[in-house]
Image (cartoon, rainbow, N blue to C red; front, side, top):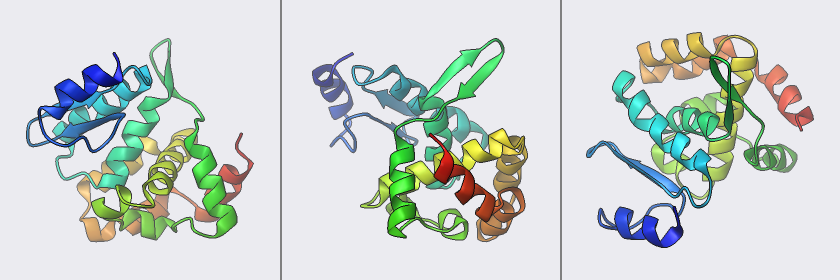
Length: 174
């Protein structure tokens, strides 16, 4: 419930990779600093659930799914994914010309997603998935990515997300 408690418990497993939360797939343990936001708990719990279905999930997709649930609200029978603070990173990267292409996102490594440009990758992954969800294509996109060879992920994403339409949509989003 607070930073000190989170650091004490999660720190028992080694250095903290994040002040917000993280998932250790080898131990099947998720840690979340809910003192920052209850959304951190939803985000981190998404990882082991998705990992059951897709153990080799690419970092961008795993963090994108987690990020969707991190800012969501329950509506009758499902979660509704909402716009959140990650939009600023995406829109800033568009203006600066540093936003990866969809093909670059699909081919990204864990090091890229969790590295210096991590906030751009997290944000882009989240908003690509939100765009697909609003187009009614998220479930099919996820299934096809899960079932495809990683080298084909760029083609799968391109089949489900029109890059030009995505960029126009995310630029106007508020």
